[in-house]
Image (cartoon, rainbow, N blue to C red; front, side, top):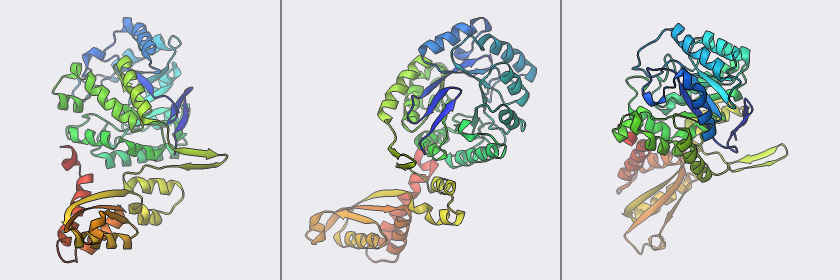
Length: 407
């Protein structure tokens, strides 16, 4: 499950440096006016970004900000293609084109673009996936259903990306060239910040796809909500968020601020370290970090496990360690006995085992399935055990509830 792919000559993956994608914004309608590049400064800005460490330049002529004034496709074309002609062959970087229209994507690829960045995830223009297939080019696809970013919550993000990957595979696209974008930002009115906070917190779930991952978070609205600052004041917040997603597995960071972002990326990459994997010829052993049973189903099915078998085993793949404090020694010993009977374990102080203390703390170790079975058993017990079972159920619910965790 270690990502190691070639994207237009760039080594992208868990053992390679994180790449910086510099935003080259041709749209005056952008939410961040400081990112707009005038046509006569295009090459100077591009060279500066490359000098600061960008290996990819993302050229866009239509603002994807939902509140931006709309422009025609002809206006987008008139901005995009001349700028692409200026850059192609004159910069030492991979060129990505940010568009949702297949005919513009095709024209851009013919004029030297290397990557298509479709924030609709092939949803707006059904011919886009065919263009990508025909050209065999890499594509950034953002989690979307009907319009860009219309997914609420990490489960919806994961399902959308899974569907996009399946569509790509059905079209004959090499899915190792599909770069996944989890749609950070206020793309639709219902997308309140807590959904983005969940994406940041659970970003490592994206690793279960075993594909390159891009994070486009630069100066986004969720950062502004926390800081109560306009886009111009969100640099430091963006760097904090960047460090988090890099530590959790991002391979490409799309940013307006190349130099400072590269510094944050280097530090976060050093902290992230190398993946735990050992290879010997055709054999390989790797540690999988799974936070959601849903993701374990995806991984098992990719190995050929039946859907029924994966559903049966999914709750065995996520491990929890619970700390239960200040319960009676008798209750602790009963809980230990019950979790042991289900294949888990529990640790408590020596004096509690010999009943030399009335109260004790208890550490309970088990899979999600084992803890659920434990709770069911404790519900029918005496003393305070039914209430402890309710508390176990509550903390497991709190762990997964978006509103509780992030609002």
